[in-house]
Image (tube, rainbow, N blue to C red; front, side, top):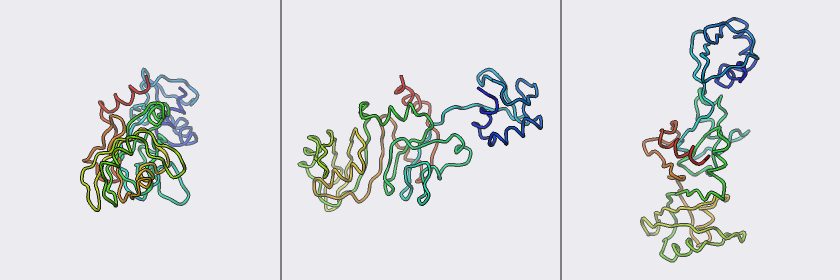
Length: 238
């Protein structure tokens, strides 16, 4: 990898900023001053330092975010705040993006990464990765609804959803449920309940595959994946 690209990727500024660091002799490779940004380095073997700070190269990041309402699942938008706006500058230079989408008013588990291959594996319909949501429903959810979800409800546009698993936590005027789906159509959970004449009034994703929302994360907070969580994600790429 080119030295200037590595330093830019690790947040030491633009290519122009990196060029200035090199020119001022602030960069060393294996304790030798390097002024040529085109020099190829091996981040696994070479010791790279900027003003005596050792550069720990990291190609990918994997962030678990407890998404708050009011943010859209995008990397940038001219009008709305995005989930990327919640991240600190120390992570922004990795250029992460959300894996899949949560609606603006939906809360909960959202994975942010710059690993495109992993993102594809998690959202590909062929992989059937389960996604579980907790929801409050305006209306009494019944055993009949469980059967309809399992058979695959037909949405308003004629699309027949795949089998979904509905678990009733409390059935009342406002019901509490958990629902597990394996696809991610636009507003899917909301549209599925509309198909059985009910309305979602609160929605939070709590699971995606073997990734579970860390309940200690406050809304808007995030952390890097633990080793076991990361191992699961990397296993999907094999």
